[in-house]
Image (cartoon, rainbow, N blue to C red; front, side):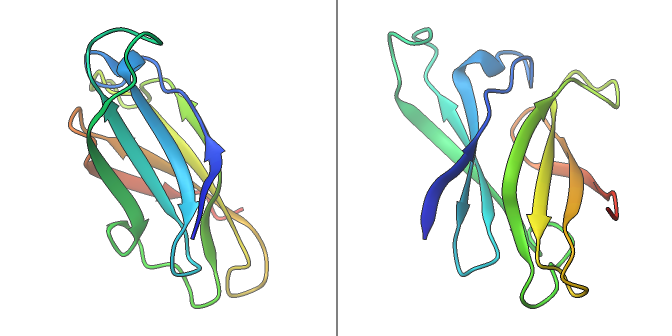
Length: 121
């Protein structure tokens, strides 16, 4: 596994995403986004992970083609669907036609994926 391949601070996801950090890591080749939920002690004085969520192939998003890699890049986005929770843009590489790809991941306040959009790029 190659943890920490990408890191983004998402501000405004849920009610208090200053305390939450999404990170990418490669597990079983295909990649994973980890949402790390931090304590409410304030940034950066307290950095204690209280829980986490994983977003990976077939779990919250479509199944990534064999040989494809999800989560090679990551960016925090503002709330795009008006539900009060920030979204993530996630990049990938080496899909079935050996090209890259990008997804918009729509999140619930608890970090679960409500929807994803494959941008097909």
